[in-house]
Image 1 (tube, rainbow, N blue to C red):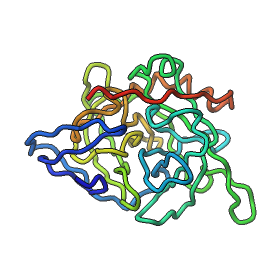
Image 2 (cartoon, rainbow, N blue to C red):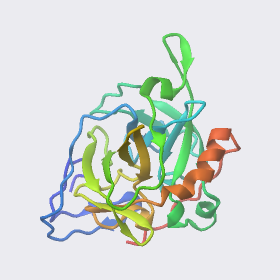
Image 3 (cartoon, rainbow, N blue to C red):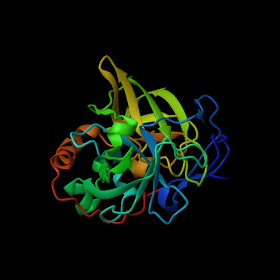
Length: 258
């Protein structure tokens, strides 16, 4: 199956990041993701400036410096420098520019043993000159508030980029349930490249990111079931990123166990 497809039939085989199969069965009662036009705060994440295939998804989260993204920790290897984020990518268009990652922040337990409860990373990006002024990404795209961990029964919208070169994002709005400590949703189509996709929950104070695809089995072994690490555990890492603490060096991700 071409991983750039907008949705995935129930009988297809798909791949998760780093080559592990996401198995499928004949499930007909679950929702299916649909093609989306994209949004400024969510984009495709490329492993380097010289690569043409995006392999994960990230989104802009609010910070005093206006330069911060959130994604899955297993999307990052090393210090993250040189990765490229393309917010709102649509086809081969980069309507808000291409932004270069300058550092990565992950939990100590991810560095030590890749604890799936801590499969969350924050990335800083370099500013760009816009209209003759050096400008941070948040002023161009806006940003999501970082919210608490999603709760059972809450509705979220998850937009992500299946791995590819010029493919568009997919989106699904679903209710959350729990698998042990991992927030979980069911919707067809979340294949390679959608790791790191933000789970956006609408609140009275505006939209908040309350999860990202990752965690158990690095996001899941089935293209119709996806997980998130409990986001409350990422608060300390987020705080270090906000404070401009020295960035981390993430380990190369191990097998997702699928």
